[in-house]
Structure formats: C-alpha cells, structure tokens
Length: 224
Length: 144
Ligand SMILES: Nc1nc2c(ncn2[C@@H]2O[C@H](COP(=O)(O)OP(=O)(O)O)[C@@H](O)[C@H]2O)c(=O)[nH]1
Ligand SMILES: [Mg+2]
Ligand SMILES: [Zn+2]
Image (cartoon, rainbow over all chains, first blue to last red; front, side, top):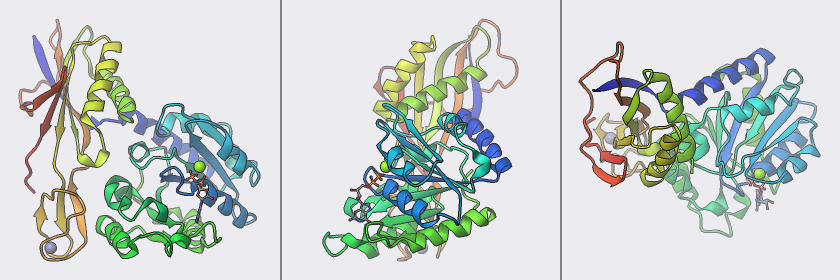
C-alpha cells in the first residue's frame, strides 16, 4: 500500500543546517563573512589581492578560495596574507557548507575580522548553497556583456551588494551601462551597485562598503 | 551541474522521512526558474542518486512554478515571460513574488507497515509530460 507523505522542506535543508553551524562559529569568533560569487575571469582574485593590499593594517582578512583545480589563486593571495585556504572542488561547480567547515578549521578565526570566500567561478550554482556567510556579493564585469545581470536573476536578487568590475574597458567594448544598472535595480532595490576597475586600482566604492559592513554587520539582513 | 549535488541532498533529506523498510515510489519537488535547475540534468542526476540509494524505480516529479512579479509603483501582479519584464505602467522596479521556490513537497512511499502520522490525501497531482524515465515535469499556470 502506498502512502503520500507531505514534507515541505527546503531541498538543500541539510546544507542549510551545516551553514547555520558555520554561522554560529563565525559569530562566536566575531568574524564577518562575505561570499563572493562571479563568473570565471570577472576579477575576483584580482579584487581580493587589491583588498588585502589596501586594507592591510585596517582589517585582518582571511580568504577561502574555491577552484575546480590548481592552487594558483591561493598562491597569488598568499603573497598578501598568511590566512589563505585553497579548496579544490574537482567537478563541483560551487562550494558547500561542509567544504567551508573543513576549510575554516585550517584558519585561526579568532585572529580575523573578515573572511572572504571566493566561490567557484559560476553565476548559478553557488547562489543556492548557503555557507554561513553574513552577506553575498555578486560580481560581474564589463567584458562579460551588459545582459548578464538580467540573465542571472537569482544572484542579483540574493546579493547584498553587486560589483561591476573592469569599467576601464567601457570605452572599448559595447556595453550599455544604463541598461545594466536598470536590470540590477529592477531585481534588487536595496543592494548597492559598486562600479570599479581593479586594473586601474579604482575600487574605493567596494573598500568603503566592505569596511563599513565588516564593522557593522547588523546592517545586513538578507543572507541566512 | 549543481543538479548532482541537489539530487544527492534530496535523497539525504528524503531518507530522514522514510519509514523503516519503506520503498520510495515518487518524490515531488517544487523548483522555481530562479534556481537554474535543468530538468533533463536533474532527471539524470536523480536516476543515479536514487539507484544508489536503493530506490531504482523511484520517480521524481518536478513542479516548475512560473515567475510572478509585483510592480513596486502600481502594485500590479503578473506572470512575466521572463523576469526582466517591466510593468505595463512603465515602472521598472518589481518585487519577486514567485519563481524562487525550492522545496521538497512530498514523497510517496510503499511500506509494509502503515506510516505513522503525517498522512494526507491532499496535495498536487502530477499531470506533466514524462521527459524521461522516472522524471515528470510540470509547468504550473500562474495566479498572483
Ligand atoms: N581590464 C581589466 N582587467 C581586469 C580587471 N580586473 C581583473 N582583470 C583581469 O581579468 C583576468 C581575470 O582575473 P582573475 O582575478 O583571475 O578573475 P577570477 O577568475 O574572477 O578570479 C585577469 O587577467 C585580470 O588581470 C579590470 O578591472 N580591468
Ligand atoms: Mg579566481
Ligand atoms: Zn506598475
């Protein structure tokens, strides 16, 4: 005899439960956690290199960086901080809460003010997996084209801040900035859009947003 | 391909709700277009994960609710073809009211002993076309 059992639970409930445990550990050690999500090549690692350089002496920052393979990003970042953990996901297209749990055990969380997680380059999969972060930041870049925010609504809606990198390329690439801004605002009325150029060392909007929120995390309510 | 992780998570979640010695016949999930889940890929991932779990015949019924937006200016609710559609009033900002669903709705279990509580006859019946063996896919019509 067959029976129907109503359930109504989040598909990724098990991951969410682990994320809540991570979040508790982060809270206990007083570290503010950012999940940085963007396509491969958007400039995530470059932005983190800049961030580690510029905020030296202001905030103690650790990074967990996820890539399918290699330790190249980890090596790049290790030049600027001793608190770097590289995670290789193999065929996995995102980081999950369990991987973060293992990675954070390798860090001295009590020494950190801020932990940035560079997620695997992908605009879809990482969005659904909570890691225990305080906020999600979605990163796009001019060279990807002006339609990418509209095509990836989940990331735009879930983000507490959005970054548009490589604005130095605006004169050379057809990119309708007004259209991009409108798409972002259409889907997310509260997240600021931070327009930056890591290559030109112009990332003040991001650095200000980051330091402001790392010091006053209660401002953010969206993630978790 | 986060479908593989999703299928594995789903199986682990279902295990929690399975009565002892029960056999899974069907699971019904409700996944909005927001999550970028491809039904074909989900079907393949499900077939592997459910076989590994010991339920090779278990079907996955995927309900896809439509996008639903509410205009921030005039309050109109509508089901846009794509999520970037603006309201007819011309205003460009909207709240997402539907399309972001991501839940396991119910399971159907064959069990020698009757399942304890939580019995229900209500719920959504699958009417969708069969995409591949073991996977049903249903697009829901909208109302705001
Ligand atoms: N023109 C330009 N190139 C950039 C900028 N930021 C990063 N890049 C380049 O984009 C490429 C990818 O950067 P990377 O940090 O590895 O991206 P990730 O895959 O997102 O981590 C590198 O060649 C960077 O030099 C920028 O602001 N402008
Ligand atoms: Mg990188
Ligand atoms: Zn309107």
